[in-house]
Amino acid sequence: ELGINSIPINSLMPIPGTPLEGLPRLSEEDILRTIAIFRYINPKADIRLAGGRALMKENGREAFCSGASASITGNMLTTCGSTIKMDMEMLASLGRRRI
Image 1 (cartoon, rainbow, N blue to C red):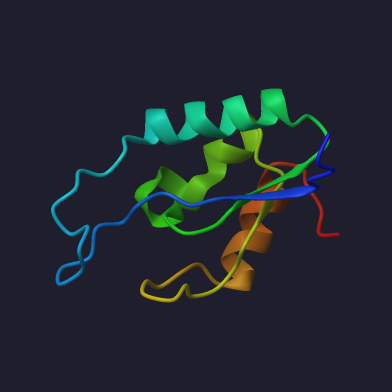
Image 2: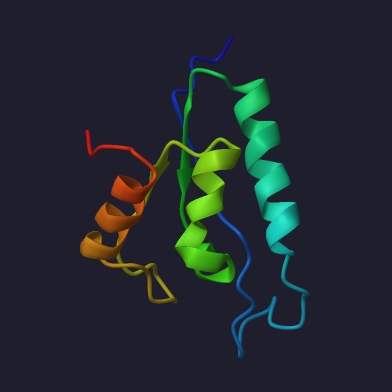
């Protein structure tokens, strides 16, 4: 209805010295379920992995099997991210290609 075509998924990474530092991290299972729900209710949108990918094994590889279709590569505002090379290798291992 709103025509949203891209949805970034961020997972909280509590950072010392910030207001949310004491909050618990989501489990990888909860992150993957969230991605799957977003895919289900937004079947045509790009579901983009953004902040918090470092919380998942293999830099979020399973997220692409749960419904993610894109990712934001590189460092985030307050955390280090993955390199383009790392993401390209991961996507190739899943049979995906860069657009």
